[in-house]
Image (cartoon, rainbow, N blue to C red; front, top):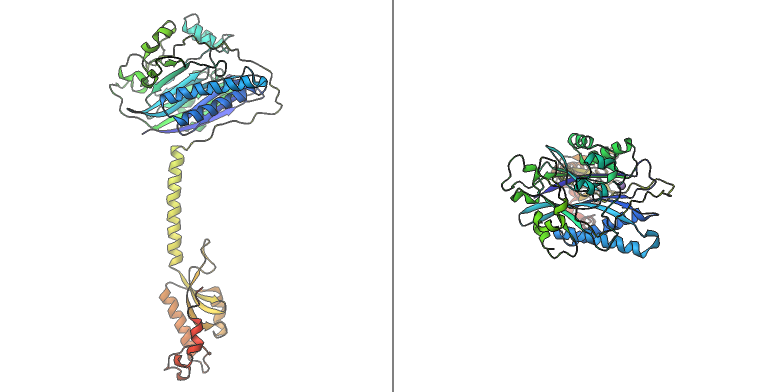
Length: 476
Ligand code: MN
């Protein structure tokens, strides 16, 4: 069993007028989309992609299901962009993480198109799992550019792959064993362009709460300039898969799909028309797509053995991120996906429910064990409960008597009106019979009162059967 806990934050930043990023957090599916396009295009593209991804993945929660869902998201954005001239040319990045059950345990599946990123944070540090589909990153992959040069390259924003540009899309896919203590970060480039990796690492290692970590990272990006929309999803593996065949201590944190052979941890890149479609399920290591990607393979620097994605040349047209001046005058609302039920929330609900049940039982024990003698419709009665009720539980009549308010000595009336509390039903009954005896000992016992023959022969029960009869059985 795998238990995840997540948090997210998204902000328009300090420069843009509209937030075209979108985060998704659900039970088993997490994503970041960074939309682009004039007018409302970017927002629509991100929303369309996230909605399609979620709907499609819900139908089939598997590795193939996630790939199909990303491809469906691409088709949805593409179709919508074609249908509406205002939205023409819109696109979005999409980085998704999904928890799926497989034959040998739970897996976290990552899928990526574009330059939003997925990182894994472990004790050993932060490692980038995805490869940007940008011109600069492809130059790095070909060894023509260093990472440092790529970070400031003028074409670093030009994407080579995005959703919505063509009807088909290649999707990079990774499969990871979710290990307890691992933390995953999905983010748009608004974070990574502003905040150095060391700073991101520091926040992830220092901030326990994923929501708080996400918010802190967004704040830091804003403090660094906030030149783009910023979106962050932090995903914690609270309870993870334990058995990892053949893993040694050092590699335990890096159980990417190829953990069994320990040699290759490249992602599988899936084209819609690829005949080896079923190969995704096993996430065949590199050889499956070697022909397409051998030239651009790049070994990762991180010591945990993760290999960055090769980028097969995509059919998608090179997409320049439009830096269109946004016209929306007001700040974009903070857009976020629906909150998922986290482990902590579940625990809270269970504890709360237990407390509520306990409190309810306690209250009933208290109320049901309480009796008092009072007046109801002019008649002296015995109630179960507390006078005036207790936390909404009204007292109820459990026994009627033959005495009326007029018959009771006047000095007893205020007590009875307030309710004479007794610790048990027996005690209440004996209070009533004492009251009754007191009345019977009067020289003129009230009519209708059944008195013992010894104390007043004239008021025997036999003498007034008709008077007492109607009062019995008048239960409330
Ligand atoms: Mn962006």
